[in-house]
Image 1 (cartoon, rainbow, N blue to C red):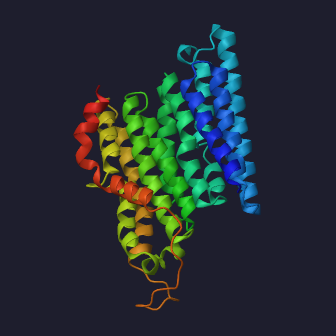
Image 2 (cartoon, rainbow, N blue to C red):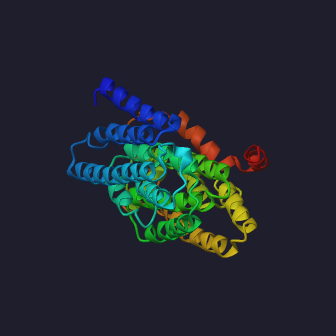
Image 3 (cartoon, helix red, strand yellow):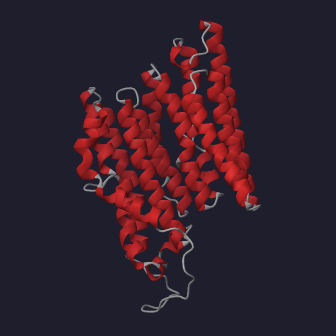
Length: 348
C-alpha cells in the first residue's frame, strides 16, 4: 500500500478514536465510531484476497448495524428525555439498546459470531489493530454511560467468558484462537465494569500488551496455524522459549502479568457478594488456559516431521522491528510485582 494512503488511513483511525473520546454528544461519538470503521476497511481489504474481502464485508455489515442501533437509541433517548448528552442517560430503554450496540461493536457474546470469522480473513498486522485499537472507542462510551442495568452486563460478561473459553477449544487456526481469547478477556472486563471502571481499564491495558506480544511473535514466525508453530524452534529459538510464557500470561497464570487483572477482578466480584459469578468466571478461565497450553505444547514440545533436528532452515533477516516485541514481552511477563502500585493508582 502507498505510504501516503497508509498514513492517511492510520490518521483517520486515530482521529475517529480521539473524536469519540472527546465527545459528550451522541452524534459526535457516532461520527467518531463511523470514522474508525471506514478508516480500517481499506486496511482489511488491501490484499484483494477473497477471504480478506469476505471478512471486510462481514465487518462492515456488523459495524454498520451496531452504528445504526446506536444512532436509533440516542435519538430515542433525545425523544424521551430531551437530552443528547452522553452522561445524561436516564431512561432504561436507550441505555439497554446502546449497551447491546456497543457489545456488537466490540464482539461480546452472544453477538460475537462475526469476530472469529473476520479475524481469520485478515493478515496479522490488521488483526492486531482490530483486536486492540478498535476496542478503545466503544469502551470509552461504555465507561461513560455506566449502564445501570446490571443484569445485562452480567449476562454479557459471563456469556463472553464461557463462550470465549469454549469456542477456542477445537480451533487450529491461530487467528481464531486469538479471537476467542479476545471475547473471553472482554467478558472479564464487562463483568467488573459497573463496580470498578478503573479496574476495567487496567484489564484492558494488560490485555492490549499481551495481545500485542502474541501477534508480534506469530508475525515474526509467519505462523497462522498450530502446525506452523511446530517449526518455530528452528526460526527463532529465543522467541520460541518466551512465547509459551506470553500465552500463559494471557491465560492468567501467576507469577505473570496476566494474573493481575484476573486476581483483582475476582477480588472485586467477591467484595460485591457475587461469589457464584466469580467462581464461574474462574472456571471459564480454565477453558481458555487449555487452548493456550495447547499452543505452548505445539511450540516447545513438538517438532515438525519435515525438518531434521540440528539443521537451521535458510531464511532472510526479519524485516519486523524487534523493539516493540521486546518491550511487549517484558511487560507481558514481569509486571505482576507492580500490582500494589496499580491498586494504589486505581483507588485515586
